[in-house]
Length: 293
Image (cartoon, rainbow, N blue to C red; front, side):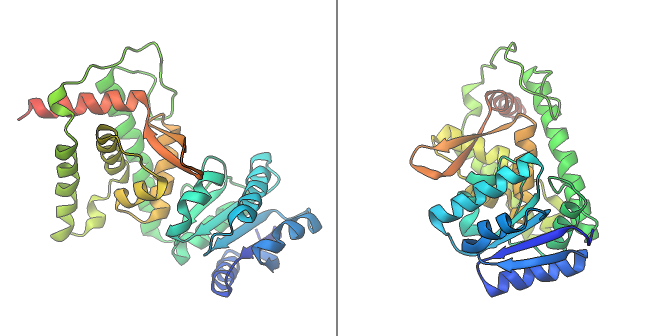
C-alpha cells in the first residue's frame, strides 16, 4: 500500500494534520499536501497520483464544486480513489457533487474510520464497506449491511414486489399497494421514532442502532407531511455517526428503497425520498401494524 502516491488536500492545518496521521497509520506515501485552490494544479502536475484525500472545514463555493467534480470524474473513470472528509455543515453541498459515485464520503470521522477508509482506498477499492480498524466499527458496518438486506427483503414481501431483494431494481409490473388511510398518520410515525429514542435513556443506544429503519420512518413521515428531506437532515434522523448514516443511505439507494432528487431551490443540494415501491411497502407495514391494535 505504501507505494501508492497520496495527495492530501486540506483547507485547515488541523485537517491536513489529521489526514497525514491517517496516512502514516495506513502506510501511505504522501507526495504533497496542498490547499483546495492548488489541488487541480497538483493533480495535473502529478498524473500518477492514485489516491486523493480531501479534508474540508469550509465551503469554497463554485471553486470547491469544480474540484469535487474533477475528483468525482477521476474516481468514476478508475484513474484514482478518493476520500472526502467534511464537517456536518458541508454534508449537503458535498453530497450533491460526490454522493452518487465511488468517492468515499466521511463526516467527522474517527481516527479509526480515517485509517480504515484510506487503507481500503490504497488497495484499490472504490468504496469503504468494512474496515480492518476498530472492531466495533467492523461489527457496526457488518450489522448495517445485514440490516439493509433484511429490511429490503421484508418490505418486498409486504409489497408483493419480488424484485426488491436487497439489491435488485424495482419491478414496474407490480401494482401499487392501496394503503389503509388509518395508517398514514405522520404524528404516529414520529411517535414511533420517539419511542425508539426513549430506549437510549435506559440502555446503551449502540445496542439498538438501526439507522436504515429510522431513516425509512423519517422519510415516510416527511412524505405524509409534504416536507423535503436533505441528506444532512436524514443523517440526523438516523441517530448514528454521520459516516455510518451516509453508508446506509448509499446501500438503501442501491437496494431500490431511496432515490436522490435535485432540490428545486438549491442547485448545490439533493433531496432523499422513498421510491414508489418503498412507499407502498411502508404503507403496507403501517396498515398491518394498525391492525394489531
